[in-house]
Image (tube, rainbow, N blue to C red):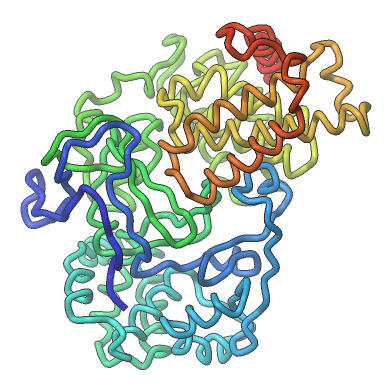
Amino acid sequence: MTASPGALGKAEVRPCVALPGQVGLYATADIPAGEEVLTIQEPLLLVVDSEHLDETCNACLAWTTSTRRGFTAASDDEVTLKTCLGCHTVRYCDKKCQASAWKRYHKWECKLFNHLQPNTPPTTIRGLIRLLLLREHHALSDQDWKAFIRLPSHQKSFRQAGGEPWEGIRYLSKQAEIFSQTNLGEETVQDLHCRILVNSLTLMTPTLDDLGICVDPIASSINHSCAPNVLFTFDGPRCSFRSRRAIAKDEELFINYIDPNDPFRRRQQALSDRYFFTCQCTKCLKGPTLREDRYLRNDMDPAEVERLEGRMFAMVDAKHMLKKMVALPKAMKTIKESGLFPLDRQPWPSIRIELALAYLDEGQWVQALKHLLCLHFFIDPIIDPEPWYPVRLVRTWTITNLIFYLADLWIMEPDQVKELEGYQLNFGKIMWGLIHQVEMNVSKSHGIGSRFSVAVKRKADEFRADIKGNESRLGNWGDPKWLDDEWRKLRAIAETADG
């Protein structure tokens, strides 16, 4: 196995100009906005989170559709997964995927996972075990191994920070050392564990549902900025980096490791806690003076504001969905009544999207629609000005699928959408307009031929086939104002999101 096989694009790893002793990713040509910068066909380590093992193919990363994902899914194809009979831990969508994974790495970890049943090692430890097994069985070249260990580990920083995180690293690294039967030694295994922790990207579905972790010497060489010029998406195992804006030849490429829309101090704290550096990007050098730190009033005690904001972020960070369903509406009410936060200032946008997704999970379709429309019209254009930015486009896709579903409910179960009755929505025009928005931008967000772009084209083609011969009923597509009335109605619905 080689690191980053099939890595193609307009970027290369070079010594970092701003950080002596480290490397970065640099453009090898002028790159327009929305263009592919680098594609890695098969990153070195792709490890599915334990919570998603039951619903994700361990090779091609196809996933089954849950309630929420039914509105964001990048494919209408039904995926049936079968459990590996050797380990009873991972699953595959067909024999081809099973054979591929077996040949590349699973033949060494299968027996081990079976021995550990019914327990499943944490995600990063399964990644560490796989890395060690590849090394022990000479399935990783010296070149690839050297590329991986050139990545920073911050082992000393982890040790100095101490506490639970370091004790966890020590304990789990020892388990990985025992399970893999490596002869590298405890200190080296801890060092490798730390490298995985600080160099992993979030592995995602094409519609940005978290799936696990990705570690790769090239992909992990790209540094952080709170004003990134590059974004990344996954299409199964394929990892693609695309330009957010025009990039000049020899310019360093940056992604964001944390949410760049968080306030300055929260960004600084998150980067220091997890990655052990103080960010000095162009945005952070301006301190807490930008949109992300703006309040609507300044007559409250700063300590009180800090406590309020901390409580709100804690609700966003909570993991338990039942607690969220209780806490998030209260958080929305508290933020609104405080009069402090603009709609686009965190944590309000994060609370809103979490609440929208929770409403989708609960089948409260109209409530979910209100919050998604609020994001679509009033927040996303400020936070992510590019209409093709993946987060923004995927949310538009979610609204598109939800509108299709509500249009069916309007006919089959009108009581469920009675609240929309007074708006006199033309569902056909809205569906056409939303599909057009996604279809026109998906090549820049995910690339032509990606699973997401294929799913968008399929839905667009199906809709055009359904309305063939009746297009005139939806209005004049050539008139730039033909959708204005429907967008006004949707904005009116969005304005009711907060009661």
